[in-house]
Amino acid sequence: MHIVIITGLSGAGKSQALHTLEDQGYYCIDNLPVELLDSLFKTKRILKQQKIAIDIDVRCGKGCLGSLPLFVQKLKKQYNIDIIYLYANKNILLKRYDETRRRHPLFKPEQTLQECILEEKKLLTSIREISDLQVDTSQTDIYELAALIKKRICIMSDFQLSLVFQSFGFKYGTPRDSDFLFDVRCLPNPYWEPSLRQYNGLETEIIDWLDKQELVQEMKQDLLDLLQTWIPRFIENQRAYLTVSIGCTGGHHRSVYLVEQLAHYFQQQKNSVIITTHREL
Image (spheres, rainbow, N blue to C red):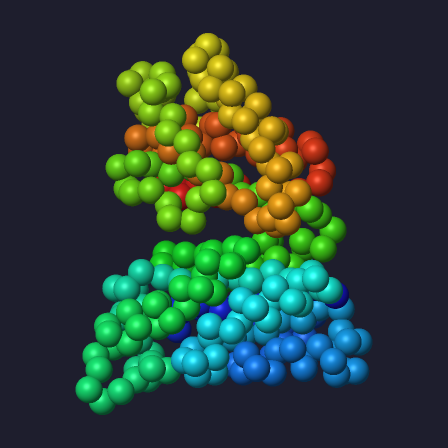
């Protein structure tokens, strides 16, 4: 039995995630009170299910959330459970509430929406700390979120690990959902070759040029050695999701090239779900 607990900030996409899982054959339960979680898995109907998704959030009551980690700890001794925490930055959440005109679950007449969001974030701290996967949906629309849920969760039953390699540009800020983050701005930069500037790390012109750079190949091998050494340790520690972020200045050349090189290598191992994303392309 695979159990997915969806939680996180209101407005971050929990409903969309649950709908996606339902479309993928999961038996879905929305807004389950924490105190019913233990008894839920003693019912015959639930025990017959192979895939279950449960949304648990602040709607179940402030006083109940603190007990969730204990319930999950007990259930993990019997079942394969993943906790997915969805969040977005404050300004994005404010914008989404303004567009939908829905009331925040913690709404009080004397409290602003911004104060509700901050309070909710504090209440969910203990849940976030035990989550298996944290997803920032600030720049993700409903279709992209659905695709991510399918890739990272729905096909995990046949693999040990969901491994994301993502490139980015430091000039646009660092991604917040990284387990490993590497800075490759020290490497030779094809941007300074006028004939190469128009291309990106997915194109032959850049690939051929970086293939010939000794420092780039040394960095590639060092990253492979490090990841080959430590990824099995994460798997042994029951980590099912890892994100490796590689950044260069603009996120178009060196980081893209290295992400593709590393992803290609680990795809050959055939024991992980491999996903590549290029934030700036």
